[in-house]
Amino acid sequence: MQGVALTKIPKIKFVIIIAGGKFGGPDLGTPKLATNAFSSPIECPSLHFIGELDSHKEGGNVLVESFVNPVVIHYPEGHTIPRLDEKQVEIVLGFIENIQTLIALDT
Image 1 (tube, rainbow, N blue to C red):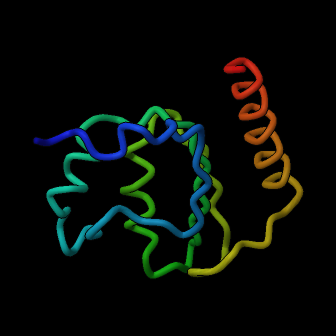
Image 2 (image 1 turned 45 degrees about the horizontal axis):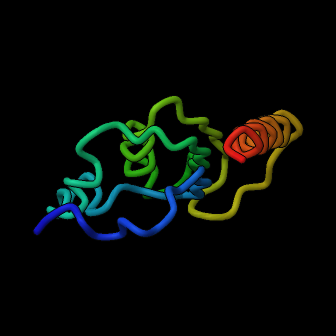
């Protein structure tokens, strides 16, 4: 019986991903469970932070491609929590404001 896991869990409303990547990564391939999870574009609003010096940057770029209309912030550091400039902070605040609006419409 496939496709019945997590059916009683509320739908995820949004994700914020820092230095993330797709399961398995570009070098290892995608495990079967992840293949099913990524079988269609993910419509959940998403904010991705990708470090230009991150050795896992390619995996982050591959993950971004799985989402519909992702918001992406590139920062100059590596695999770390980014320090944001004013423009990037505005992007983050805009994303959060959009999420607040979406959540308010759902209630």
